[in-house]
Image (cartoon, one colour):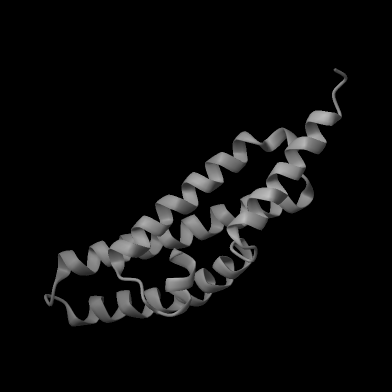
Amino acid sequence: RKWDAFARGGLNDEDLHEWRKQVKYLWYHLRILRPCWSDMLCDLANSLQDLSDSLRDDRGLAELRFFLGDESFVLTGLIDRRRAELRPTVRSLGQRVYAKEPALFAAHIADHWRAWRQSFPH
């Protein structure tokens, strides 16, 4: 899992980009389930959006750094510092979003879906 690899410090720039795409997909899927949201799912969706935004910022900085190469030591130093500042935010959001194992997370979502569906008369 991308979160586990990130927590161990084992993701390169492309891995972080792929992780962001997966975060966005999960966020989009949760938005489809908006009618059955509890406060917990709303908080999770907000955390996913924040995580996606932080990973997007990191990606943009990585691309800028690659483009600059070694042309500007000052700018690359600022870029590296900002990326390092983003890491604790990404780590915190990742811990929150991926607190449950995938099977437990899926079961939790299914429970919300069933409860919502049962609220309608058949």
